Image (cartoon, rainbow, N blue to C red; front, side, top):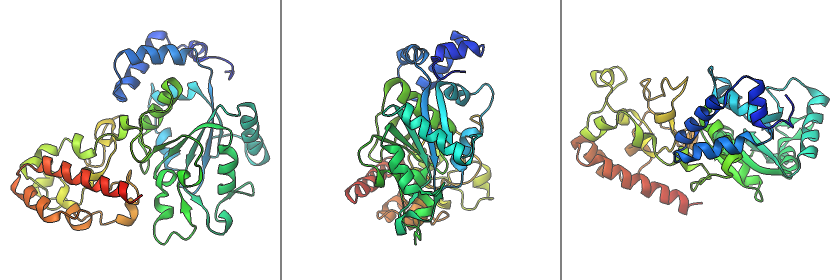
Length: 351
């Protein structure tokens, strides 16, 4: 398939009908909370679009973000997205290695200067000139700066790239930082999560290719996926409002699907689409599997720790008010919303 082919041509070559493509666009528009008319606009725009050059850099990371994306199913939205783009460089997925791999990156930068999308996963070590992680003898720091110069936009994938993640956690021996700490002159879209949900990654790419940069929240995340807390959409929310909480992971409450708040669930302060998009073909997500949310899409989630202590004991200042309301089941949702927003405001003020 030639990079010069537009998407309509390339999909036809693969035997994918316009009807099937329109279904795909409708699903993507719905997933991003766009109006029905956006599906047709997306289909028309993408069908005429040449395959977008994408360079994917992986720095201090565990490959979990790539692993997440490759956990696709058939037929797959991810497969259609990768028909839309030309993935010209990716450490894990590319066939080339050594000199040939770096030549591919350099050629893609030259041929598509000012037009390619740069995707980055992993944090960037900065201590001692960034010597703690290098590729082809080039530090992650220098490679990011070099590759970002010609990028039209940058998508930081995963909590390591968006906030520094686990490599940045105390005592941060490599001086790890996020992409936005280094690059200041390019639009950056943060797709946080450890790792992010596959359809969130592809949904963001579809939006960038069709409509440009999506509406972002205060942390640079697309509001379509990070506009609500997991708690807001959690199927256990009614139990929270009723004051019904599991006390251990194997008690009667846990077996009955009661709220995991008292077991340390961070859903009330975590903004992500886990409760709606879910994982493994939409099968489940951590809370549905019986484990509380760790808050992995929020800044510094690892340092905050206390994964099995309720928020009232580890994070929130207004602990007594919230705990009392939770036990009594009185207007818990309203109080939680106020406390959550207060916490976010404090985070913003502390930037």
